[in-house]
Image (tube, rainbow, N blue to C red; front, side, top):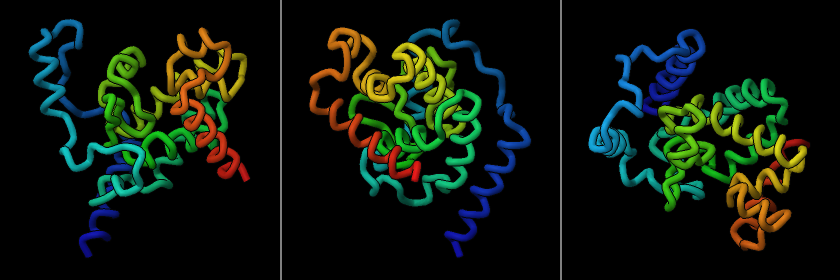
Length: 196
């Protein structure tokens, strides 16, 4: 019964977000106008509980901390279509980055479904990287920019998403980092599987 109640609550939240996409929260003072101590206090306060701070493992998807995959796929389809990216590619990035866990945090501090680093999230206008729609909007915009830079080459764009544009530019392709090569291979396999 508790699981079905949780599903109902998730569905209500999903519907509210579609009809009322603007958050009904008090206006925040822009980040650049707040002091370091205030920003740090906010980051610590808003950090997810320690038990959900593990990325790249399916076991991180527990306790109903996850939106249904179908709801996430709807958001993906919306932003991917707007940005002319195959939704299957964005879903593959999310699968590999966070296993569809919107509360995932990597050991390096990347956050949410598409594992945005704090500085990258801020540059993309993502205020709450744990909010699925904001995270996907930002991650898809970043992916679109990388695809444009690398002339539609999925492997170089994905390598830059993982290792950074500088590493890809210096190597002239996928950098010779085992983690990055593995990442690109995993995303491309998931993309091909999702495209079938």
